[in-house]
Length: 171
Ligand code: IMP
Ligand code: MG
Figure 1 (cartoon, rainbow, N blue to C red):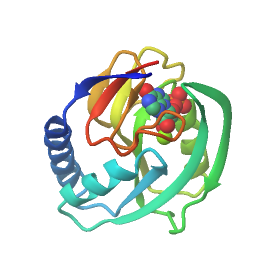
Figure 2 (tube, protein in one colour):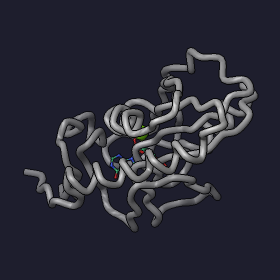
Figure 3 (cartoon, rainbow, N blue to C red):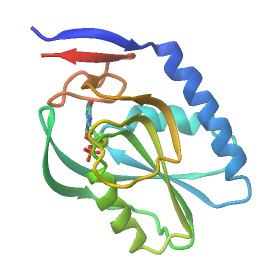
């Protein structure tokens, strides 16, 4: 049976999202903000973050997947493209967790081809150990060295996204 070791509580998650939402509201006050959530892992974070942003903004979703189990397969498959026209807009990509950074690099390339005015990254978790590309996470709620975590949108083989807090998964 997998073991779930509590790592980040529901309350800590909500406090950090509140702070991040405030920062984004200030930084994008005079901009044309579009939050672009990366499916599926960001869906809960996106919903909570959006409600903590106090300036007008629009929301879109993009689908990309490279994981099976706890390891990346390396092949990124786009399962959904943005619906909104992102040209000259200020895009903030919303991701659950940045691990190697491979997924984001490819997504950034594809968004750049749509000619946004700016593109930045907001991640719930910035996980460092396996980063192998140069990526600046502009807004991150939590920083983690290593491990495989589940809950609050993050899955293991599509399960445990519904857990309200974040757990370290020991298989
Ligand atoms: P990257 O391309 O290696 O940065 O992988 C990013 C994606 O892998 C994330 O969007 C997650 O979907 C998944 N991922 C990476 N680490 C974890 C984890 O600890 N738990 C659950 N999913 C993870
Ligand atoms: Mg993801």
